[in-house]
Length: 360
Ligand code: COA
Image (cartoon, rainbow, N blue to C red; front, side):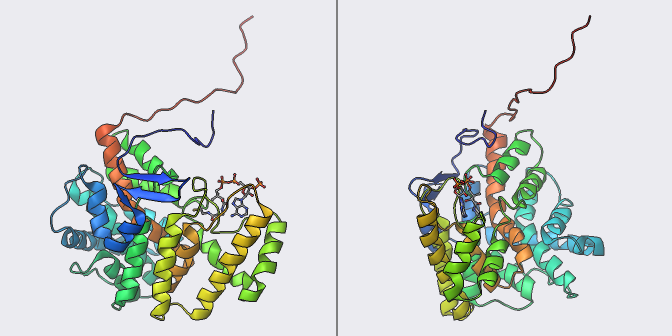
């Protein structure tokens, strides 16, 4: 029995392959580097859903219309929902979307994290939600709905790269949750809500906020080695480093580091912030190599996610919602693959409790 199901194969998939030994992520036959360089999120959504959900030819426009349909539910965001942590507010609003296996419910689920997250963040700041513009690309509209102004091309491109980077990643905890629910033939909204609930945990989608807390605590590049050394001596983990499967560098970290550098050249990230992050990364890698020589610990996806989402204006308590905006494409594709090709997922447990007493 392996309580974390390590090395247990629980699904066959054509969607993505996480090659931990070689630091490679393949999404439907395309390496992540190529995908990030050439595709925008809508194309990756089509790629993921190919054969599982017949998406319309005018997918960007259809997704735009789905954002508009979803926006109608923003009116039901009462003060109690607005007061929740953003990921809980998002889950409460997404629970109002129709359940089913059709294209409309699926596109509304893809649209929802962008629409609801930006509306909830504006409402808690006393601002009116901004209605979607169906003619814009998904990432561009997400940033416009958040800030109320059109993002620069570099900002929209950076968010798009992020959404593409995190769209799918093998049988991670939230995707597994989606597949378990889909295996019962429940609808896509049920599968996506289960996945979102798994994503919010700090061991899965909740790590990038603490990366920023660490940068703030370090303060200055020169202070990084001593601060990190102290943290490791106290037995703490360095946020944004290490991974269950990757034994070499997480390829998503490189994809996002590239996006962060592009943002920095356009002035969207202060040079001092980038310099601090690079100093912390270098010091952390040096220390981890020295202090944990038996365990390869490299930069993971969350480290540069934190810088990127901060530069795009997302507050750190909403980072998980933005993660969901990308990963929802993977959840839906996996849920459909499971429902169409899989069986009811029903593992066994070993009973270790007391047994009934024998009758005298
Ligand atoms: N900083 C310091 N030490 C770390 C570490 C980190 N980020 N990640 C792992 N280690 C060490 C552990 O302390 C342990 O050392 P020990 O054998 O001396 O006790 C060893 O590496 C193995 O740890 P384990 O928990 O078995 O590794 P895992 O593969 O199950 O953990 C993570 C994977 C991601 C949970 C872990 O690397 C971590 O907590 N990272 C920080 C949080 C983070 O960035 N999460 C986002 C992941 S995408």
